[in-house]
Image 1 (spheres, one colour):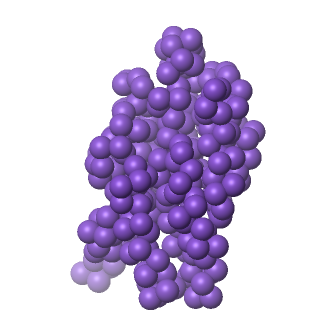
Image 2 (cartoon, one colour):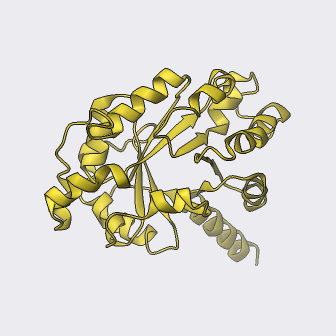
Length: 254
């Protein structure tokens, strides 16, 4: 296990970083998904039934596979941010960040003093067999903060948001964005796509990279060409079910 995890340095280096979603919060599932060539594992504690309290060793298992666990919490709440990092998240994703003020609060919640006001007790270090004091002293150098741009308001405030020091990734959420643009679920619409094309252009030279989540390979390649460097690539469950159904159809139809 590499510590500190190099995700932050790789983001700063402009590497293409690819991840996928953890289908279920079990050690077995985490170990299997992390056997793929992913850079980060998206653990969704916003919309799924996953609770931070139930993750146990899952983030540590990802770390042991040199995969960066990224936990999406339910809201920009200091208690949720702190707990996510304390159980082993390298990156924390915060949904629906709409203003620079909200972004500044997120940075404060994510960093130890003097850069922020996060309380100190990363108990994942003891689970991983690492030196607790060393982890505390180096945590701010490892911590990755991913803020979601999911509304027209956030997009209109993008210039102010990206001036906030301490943000690593601004992650465009196309589905929520479509709702605020009046074309709910139509992520392929011109309204959504125009914003998605513009965000990475605006972030050039800021040290912040553009991220998003997509499923289709052609669309993912398009977004890479547009400048996205932090991309969630579908879900193992979604891809697996598609292959299963294709195989069933082939067998039944001869």
